[in-house]
Length: 255
Length: 257
Image 1 (cartoon, chains in turn orange, blue):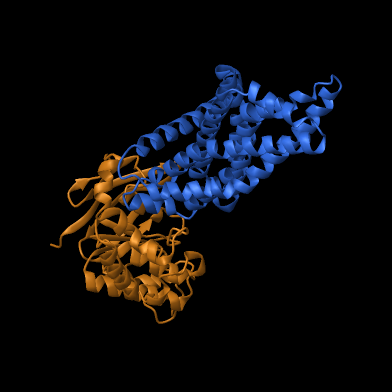
Image 2 (cartoon, rainbow over the protein chains, first blue to last red):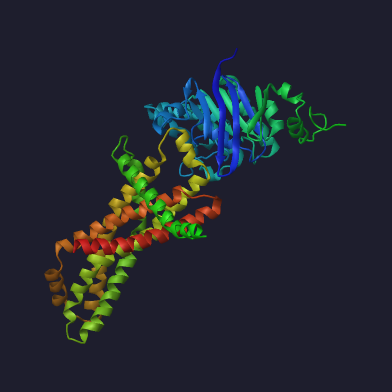
């Protein structure tokens, strides 16, 4: 059996009267790309924010490498967060800093490396994401796709064990989406870290996923390999697959 | 029905209590983190430049014209008694005790405080504050503490510049324009103005700096709902800071002098 990086047990979360997470159970395998797919506004981001401790659940447990994190204080959570990198939906680059400083920021704050060593790492990470000549640019001068690349470089810079991706392809055109997805897959194959991706972009996700979890009505209704999910007979899953409307794609409606 | 009425009449108090609690907690946390290593000295310097150096022109113009108009108004009144000689003293006392600190703080609130709120609110909306937390860094330490320390340090500096420029403005209008005797003008200032007038005024400015920065940061930090939320937070922050400064001014003045 593969090692498990994250275990979520019976996680509940409501905002006011609105139930967002209604008993999530999920195990995320170490060193794989797990994609959580669900509708927009269906609680995917909320789930991701629980995994990194930005939100506290109403009830339930989240285990990360043997530590239950839902009752931890901010200070203890910060130790757990050291294992994570995260790529935010809009990249969340600090717009008071240029690209270089953004990527160097976690190194400066969390390590005692010299400027020279920091420069070596930042240059390497930027070339990994294909943005070698952009170190001096400010975030405001970058396109959405470039911002995400910088965000990925920043998420990778401390060599975290786990990386979270919040809608990595949203608001990108199909071609840029593909390059971002390939970049995600490529870095994962090189680094062998645990990636957790949330998205509603089902087509794109089958391209990179090792495991797919379907989030529906606040629960994980199915969890398996992309092949298993594609051949699922569950109505809710079929509905999502059919919505891709691409003839020839497994699950597309090609009568 | 009575229960509903009771709830409705209690709600505004709860809102105010909630606000005061939130602002108080943020102040305490920012203060505590200010004494904890690592010290973010470069962040403080950057904010000192933004709050202090960049506000210089606005503060100088405000101070200069306030001093000038004070001399104009008071000489009009005192000429009737043939007591124009006190104009210098009036300008100096009004500037150092009251107008220098208060007008400087209000101008800096409008210029730098509004920018603080807008910047932090945008950082909230674009998840930059969450990004700091995910990096295991405390956003209060990186964003609020430097702004609070910089405001605390820079407002007295700005206020003393405003005092100085205001008295110069008073001199220019009183002596050069209206022909008040230069000796009487300067002599009265020397006689009346105490050192206490100046430093109590500067203490007020430092307190206003803390009030302004904490309220503006709090509003930015807790903004919700996209671009509209950013605008709303900014307006609320400037209004709340300005009013609090005016109320605090009365309280401090009555305690000090």
